[in-house]
Length: 147
Image (cartoon, rainbow, N blue to C red):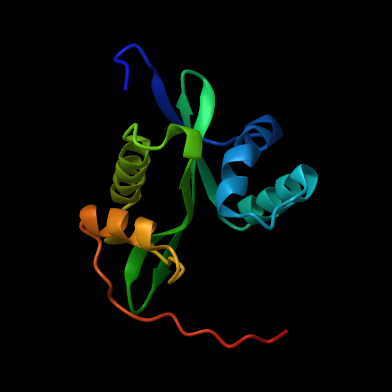
């Protein structure tokens, strides 16, 4: 990556931030086909504790990380990363590392003992990345479809 490129990571604050994240987030959440539906859902999730980290490369959104902080009897205080994606056009620039490391730092600042990600079994490339970042598999997620 060119040394002149400016990287900034911030938490989304308004509808303009959410709208700017849509194109990158859609690469991960391909079912989100309507930007307005996406904006409304992100807003609802924000009302329930969701945070959307935006990685800007030279002012343009190149990565997103959606997360919440939870506390449970079994895990204590932890950060759950729900969404983590970098723009396919900007991969291999080290942006995923920067966003992941920012999220881990944010988790520490918020008093979390660990950071968790649930990743679909089909996402082998993502799993290699998570293992490289020293994440370990601690459990299986079991799901009962109700609809």
